[in-house]
Image (tube, rainbow, N blue to C red; front, side):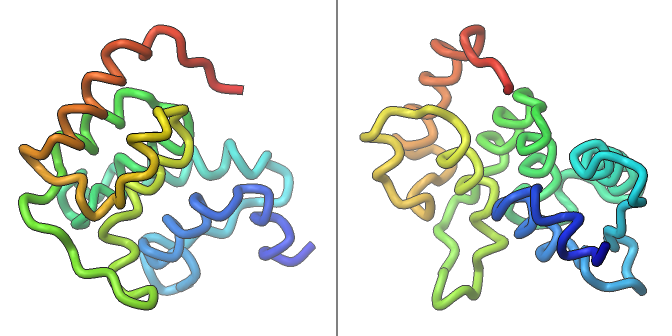
Length: 149
């Protein structure tokens, strides 16, 4: 089976994290080529652990490693993403800068936030902003009710 077919079940956001961390480049440390005999989600989780042995959370702007952990079920990564929000908005234009806001997009997509929070452009999720405070308050209130399926 081709790699594209094996990893497709990961879904759009996880695939974007791989794109942002050179997951398609066999010469890069971030290369992701899961063995065919391992569940692709387990392989993704193992890949994050391997990346974490070399990269720190702040080695990539935009909180990519915490985003990857959040997308693999680690809810504590949501706090890391919020703690690492930029003080100024990143410019996002026709795909450029997407990796810089991927962590916020992941949170907005996978957490059942209120529509008011989901409607705010993730570029406005900044350090010290009302969006940061609102998402943090939402997490505090709902954290114990969240379950991964």
